[in-house]
Image (cartoon, rainbow, N blue to C red; front, side, top):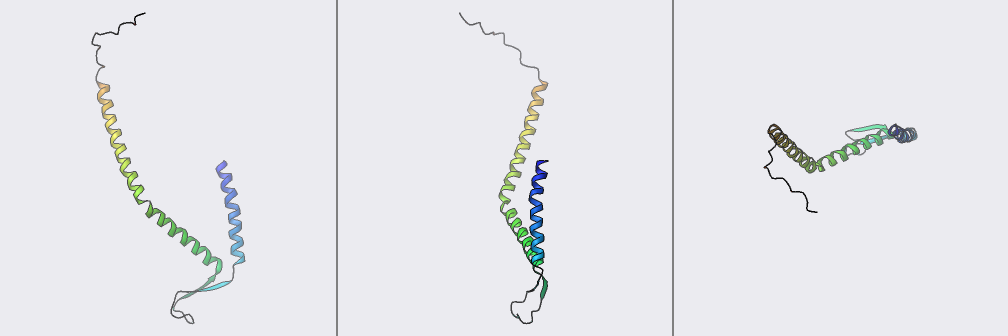
Length: 118
């Protein structure tokens, strides 16, 4: 319940800010993908500024996420290796428990511990 309240307290103001950004930046901009001819580009897109901002934001998040994922490759590999070792050790422990559970406990050798001397 607390998590839901905190999420609402974060998401609602963020949504208001994004809507305000979109309303304030409705003017159209031309984005040219031709570095050689600025007067008549081979490909240009005219779109509202807020669409460009949101698209670049999403693109940046995707690039950052991919970079973080690639950077964590070493840790994921180590985690997989250690998980395999833990599984093997659990199987070995289960086998040892089964082996000793089926054997009767060793009989006492007949030597008792003498009582302490007062």
